[in-house]
Length: 134
Image (cartoon, rainbow, N blue to C red; front, side, top):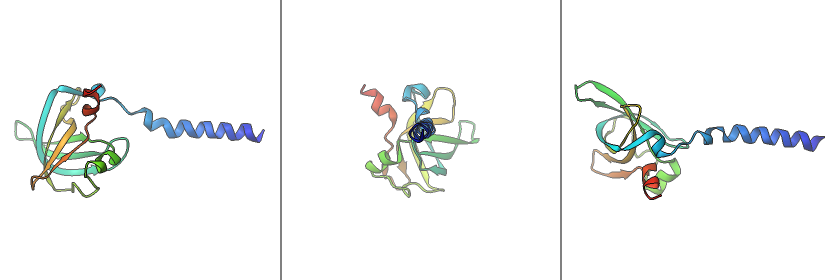
């Protein structure tokens, strides 16, 4: 009886632990390769978490109105392999982002590269790179 209860608890734990992983998506599910973007703005927030790190920047749109962009990056581990660390981008930094826009949200993107104000370029490990070769 104890073994059965232990198995049930372990199975339930596995379901809860894999919940966020199942939310992971392919590049093509959210982003569009035919919508390349380049956006320059000021970093307002950085989220260093799995399955994708994210950062947000304030940038002016075509009408001069400030909008907040949401950019997806690779996982923190993938970013570290590309030379990033938690302090690569700080609040208030001016950055230029290249990548692809989301299909259904005009201010969401998947970053391919981030260029800092000093000219240093950080490659973002975009999931579009993985799918382009498949």
